[in-house]
Image 1 (cartoon, rainbow, N blue to C red):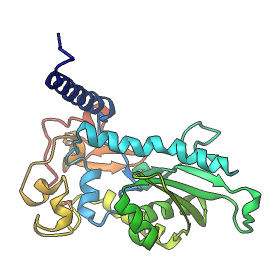
Image 2 (cartoon, rainbow, N blue to C red):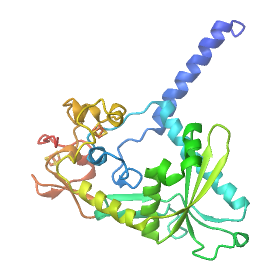
Image 3 (cartoon, helix red, strand yellow):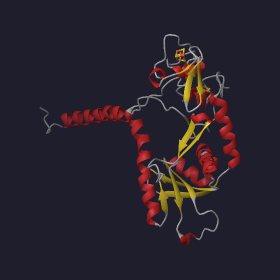
Image 4 (tube, protein in one colour):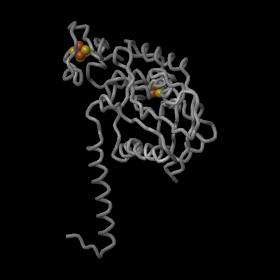
Length: 288
Ligand code: SF4
Ligand code: SF4
């Protein structure tokens, strides 16, 4: 039995609780398989090789319990953002009333997509005469990122978020979006009304199409691992040190993305069942 009157025992117990929560939350939050579609949140990444590597499942990025909780906090925060907007009279749709699911965009034979945080309608007192329906995007920030956002705005300080919103706006024909950010340090909020860029969205769709349909690795952002984006990239071993990709059909040279989000094996000339895609077969040949 632990002697709770002993401060060392108490501290050991607290440490064990921390470890247990880290392990349990990792098991609870970890996804069993990588995302099937190329997400609109990723296609704006600076490195095309990265986007392709994620889409082709070259390697599954692993996170410990702390990092997964950190990501999860962003999702959980969405309910709070919605509450604040409703308190000042906004109408907020976070799911499609017809399907009960999040509003989505889809493209490139179902291999490209993303989910909208919300569609929102400002109340009368804001006196908005143009389109009264907005795209809503909710993001949590650490203090440094939040201060940069306030100073530079979304387009400059968070270009990936801006691109993601422009893609959603283009598909739903929303010319404007409300980007609502919160500073995790002190709960300060920062709304920005953004004019979305449909031409940029078209570029992103073209980029998604070309990356999804590429059977070879698109250009890397740098030739050496010392470049700052590569230093923190989980694909650096594959890009710069000859590491073998993980085995599955999407990392196999014989697999091609085909219609209705399916994958076709050129060697066996057939659509690949999901349970095979995840593990590949004995004829697997690395694509890179
Ligand atoms: S390691 Fe560098 S070049 Fe390779 S995917 Fe990552 S960012 Fe791109
Ligand atoms: S079924 Fe085999 S050969 Fe075909 S794509 Fe998958 S791993 Fe490659």
